[in-house]
Image 1: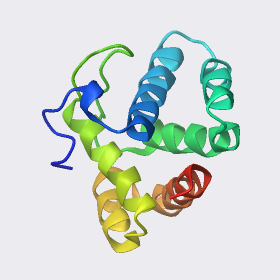
Image 2 (image 1 turned 180 degrees about the horizontal axis):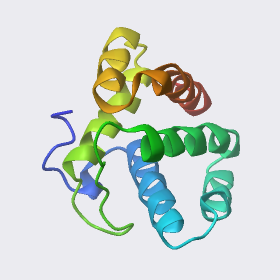
Image 3 (image 1 turned 90 degrees about the vertical axis):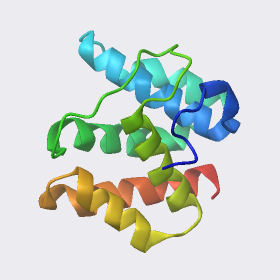
Image 4 (image 1 turned 135 degrees about the vertical axis):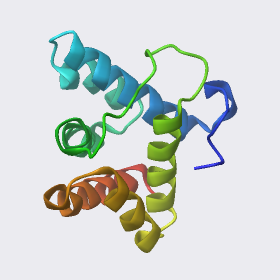
Amino acid sequence: MYQFLDRSVAEVVPIDRLLLCSMRQWVASVRAGRCPCSALGPVLQGQGLANMLPDLNMAMLLLERESLSQLRFKPPFAAEIGDDEALLLSLHALARAGAQPRVDAIIEQIVKPEARLPLSVAVARIAVAIGR
């Protein structure tokens, strides 16, 4: 998590920037009553990652509905990375590194028990789609 705390969006590698922007856009779309997949689909398609969309949508939906506390996301074009965003970027980075026990430990801290396995699967599938 500390690799992302107190960092600007411009400082992170492109895939983490894409994940962060996608998470923020998902939240902004849902709050505005719009379909998040419609907003994210073209962006992910342009990056060759359209196959990641269902799992990203599932992960975000689980985080939205099953989190133990309200996660906070900054607006889509904010320059700094928020604390909860840093935690989720760490989760995805650990999944890409194959550190499943650490992924599971983070997931335990952020979602209800019944959401842990589906979130773990979605995060693992996102890592595969990105290509670890």
